[in-house]
Image (cartoon, rainbow, N blue to C red; front, side):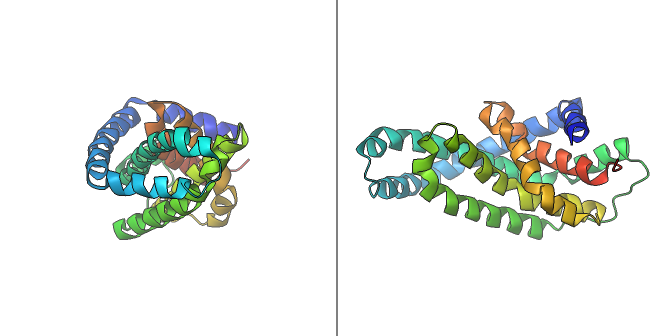
Length: 215
């Protein structure tokens, strides 16, 4: 596991990956701004309405502003994840060829399936995130909870994208370790600017875990 993470980190900060991430992040930023402009009133209205049911007055006032900021942050992360899932095929093939030339990409992820899995993961994330809002303000526990929720955004789509591309037969191992790998990748979400690397880091991490020879 340690070797997998170290190899993934070296790939992550290579020139080709950085350029890919920057292009994806710029596209995600533009799309996020458009979505915020179109749906901001609806989203904030839902949050305000939900917080009104919470008996803690301090959370209804000061918490609302913090949740709105977090909402913008999460929307951007979701958009980056979606675009990464849809556009990373060529990058993953290059990295696989670099490290595992004896393994060829036998399949191609279906865009429709990738999109559907990402939307389902996003829906589950939001379904769990909204009632978990009060818990996010609990020191330590709140950070672990949001880390787990972030992992939901990338686990299933990443398993599909990597597994379909290389026709991986160890899907069970990916499922078993998927949450841990996704939570590891999601640690980047705690670091401003580096959070744009989270989705592609997850894909690279899953790639190496699946293709590297088991010792």
